[in-house]
Image (cartoon, rainbow, N blue to C red; front, side, top):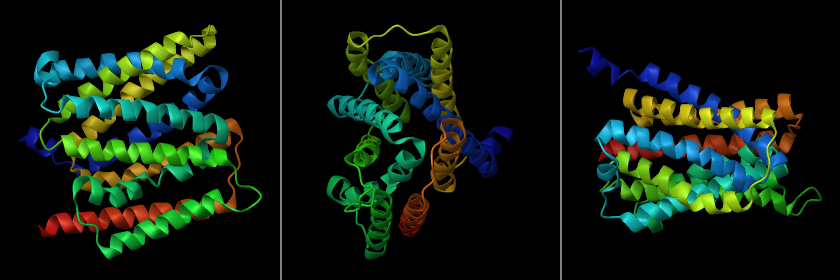
Length: 295
């Protein structure tokens, strides 16, 4: 009885999701610090070594062996998924060092809108006019943040937009492979093949690291594993439709880190644009849930 209740504890699931956003915001702050001191490839490589070990431990616990976790009829697609994600992480961490956490996350938060826009051509899903309207409002918010045509626009501001597009593609591919594969299999390929892709670049670009920064690197690895563990527990406790809107809380938490730790600025256009993007994303998510419930 207790186990059944635990699987349907929405409040606890929401708390796990909020905890995950706090941890991921802290991880982004650590990533920004380390990638400002060392090259992005080395930082992500070490992070993925730890992440891959965590993924393999989870796979052993969930399905009993790595061989079972690796079994799939969509091997090429799963490997491509892993490549897209590790490349996206590199691009996003680069954005942290160029633009900072506040503006990077303000733009990146549009990725659910990109998923909605691309779900039609990639997954064959129907996107109604209301969701298209919300997508339009969201991208208006992105334009408010980027301010194209103004004197303050920088091409570097497009870096987190590229990252958002890559993460949207990763999300769509994850939904596609989930039609045949278990979450354990997808998680396994994400970690192990991501490590395989990034390791040669990290070793080639290796730099000596100071003792204090090795401590920060350890913290980065721990926060990465902890964040994913919180997400796993979150989805064990509650349905995705109940907890997913709370994932947007990573934006304010990351902004707090950027403002207080790195002395970043919160420009008015960024606040207005991010508000439009988040509102549009929540509306899109709500419409998707209504459509799913009507089936």
